[in-house]
Amino acid sequence: MARDEDLKKRWESVVSLLSEQFADGQPLDLDAVIYLVGVQELGQLHRKFKKDEKLDLMHIAICRLLEPYGYYSFEYFDDDGWPHYKTIEQLPSLRAGEQSVLMKEAIVQYFLEKKVIE
Image 1 (cartoon, one colour):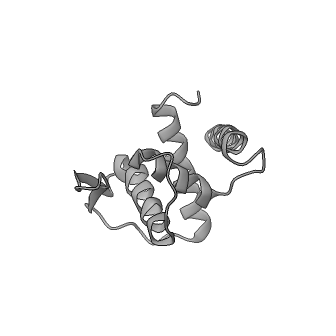
Image 2 (image 1 turned 135 degrees about the vertical axis):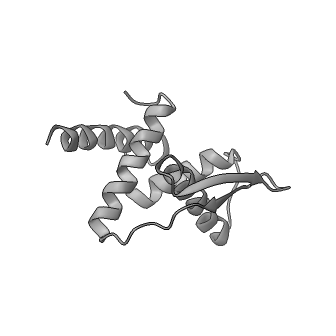
């Protein structure tokens, strides 16, 4: 149970920090946090993105976040600076709640690695 409480507290720290910085304090949802990770990974922070690019950013984030779990591996940056990943292992079939927990764990780990939260 302590692990779940730890995850919950750290997730709330991530959401609070990002919500203050990017949403005037309005709580961001999981998809918004994933999108912001994608923007960070792309490194093109101050530009507007088209709808299809926003989906690509979320894909980049998911690949990056699940890379430490062995599901994806970074391959290369294309000429426009977009990272590309290859699938190493198919994601297991997870229920929506399980997917959410996996992504929150991966996001918390990402922000711990970046030393944004403790």
